[in-house]
Image (cartoon, rainbow, N blue to C red; front, top):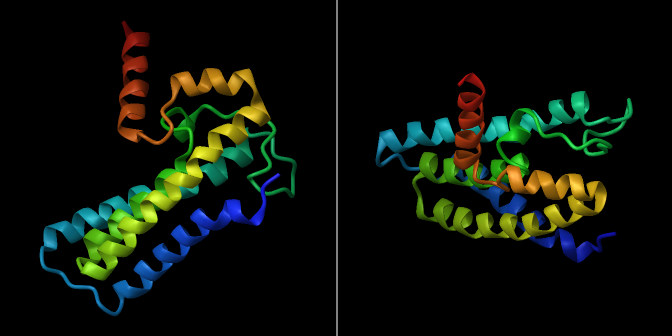
Length: 166
């Protein structure tokens, strides 16, 4: 089980991200409008990686009715989980990047730069916990699906579809 100290990096990352979001309304500057539009696109991508697991785990993760989506009993390797192993850990750094691009203010940039590695520190424990929970099936899954590199994950998924067609 985890002690309270194990939650410090992700808690700080969450608070810094919340601060970024709040500051968007007070100190945001738009120096380069095109970057702002890219930021909104990344924000939407972040929303997908953040919300999709809630629905996928409820549907395919063997979650008991009435339980949180986090209480999975089955390893899920389809949908967003065929692209990355930890989509919600992808969501927060993408959100930090989106806020940086939308806000375009040095304070928002610094908060994001600090938040991203804090979330990635917490990510190191996630694979370890999943190995404990799912064993060899998860180790095999780790060989097939990148931890957070969604670009590589998409390429792998698309190349598998191409191999099936030929």
